[in-house]
Picture (cartoon, rainbow, N blue to C red):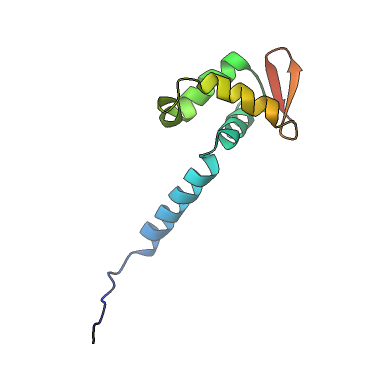
Amino acid sequence: MILWKRKAVPVLVMLGALAKQQYARLTGTWKNIVKTVLISLGGKADLATLYEAVAKAAPDRLAQSNTWRDKIRQVLNQNPDLFQPVARGVWKIA
């Protein structure tokens, strides 16, 4: 008979780990990154401001891609239910 002894994990440590996993899942996609950053900028921003804010918010994602600016524009253009153009190079949350 084999008995497994489980190591006690403090509840706050476990909740912190779960929160970190959930945050990574929610902000891990380009669509969620762009949406979160655009909301933090007041719901409306030009591309230059959006690029700068994404660079600060998700530097690990930028390190994985040389074409991240193209990806941001692709996300904006392919999700009209979330993002709407206001003028050339200016976007807002739909």
